[in-house]
Length: 534
Image (cartoon, rainbow, N blue to C red; front, side):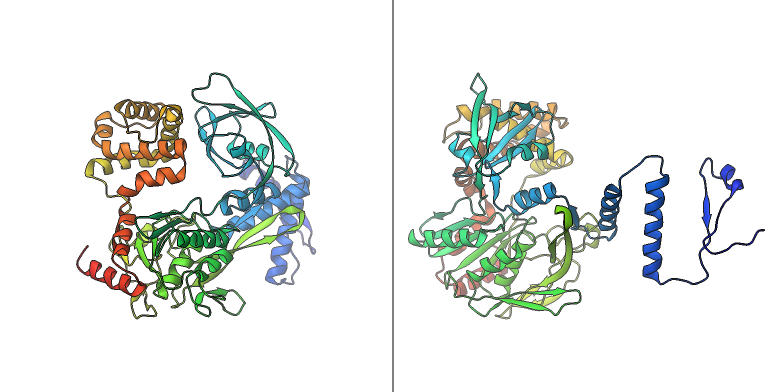
């Protein structure tokens, strides 16, 4: 066998037959073993060079580096890490965080026929231009959009404030297309879409996201409700996926005394950092209930955890999602950005609420830690300021557990039928409501023909459900239709008023607040209710 000198390569002819057409090139490295980081860098450079120069399909260096960087992010096992392009980071800040952007102020919904308007932001160009929920977008600047992906349609609608855009709509009940010219403006999605006094003295505030204005919107809502006689508050965090941690700290400060700890952040290679309330609270002594569910996550759980640990709010509802890690956004060259999990946060009592998860970020139900759905595994126990037991390691456990919607056996059966086709079910519901919007009045009741239309849309969308199963769950089907129709026809606040009487967690909160004037009384009432099974 011939001798080999440093880095000499030889083609192994025999390998050609043995590998079914795969040409093998063998390289022999120097006797000196490089350090591990040198070996990794050398390997990467060699592979990149060979792919760039020898691969049958050519690819630019820029593309190779981008794919390599994306592969690196995907390989680290962080379900929340992402590498964003310039357009993608703009979409993330606009859609996921809810920050201000240049555009028209519409949320979109895809349905089988194209793209429809799911909602319109108050005071936006879309609202001022008369756009209504349920309108179908046919074309943008003359370009048909029915077959375009939803994110591509969004890109056509956003742009520099002051720039113009022409949109063609179809509207149920209007025979001709509607052509409208809009001027883009700064749009600020609302964290608090409405607020109202319920009953004699309870202020209700739905906080839907933690965007860049969440704290100021919350403060304005609290101040306005106080002027209208609110002496207690229900803060609704159900379905709130989180957002800006700084905003969560500021919102918590509206209820906590200056100096009280809100959260602690522990990061790799950095000293732990404690965050405390800096200013006097806006809600000083009024009793407070926080509503949470399985979709209350991340920044929302910071608020819930801080107020629970300091005995400042009674938590009502279902165990929250359990996301106790923090992502940081790093700006990179070329307009790219990297979102990376960089630390864990802890509540004032020292608990982490992070739940064990699968790689895709979904709860790992195999760990048996969905406390409201299965017998709980042992979880760390901590103490609130007042000595109450609070649990870590699996979301925020409510002080008063109340399921969002108690379904009958027949309704649960239909819900299981819907679950594998949730997106199609939602689209069918949306389409029925969109068609009914021109004909409904504020005091409408769900008619049998509407249920028939919903069933037909389900079948057309590929949701295979037996008619007898559908009919047996009529009360739940009616509620689904009522809520979607009211939302599209009359807006969020009207839909909320219609749904409130059957909202079990909300009604439990209101019942407790009717009988108390202080947070201490509320705690005593909640503990007596839990002890008695109420």
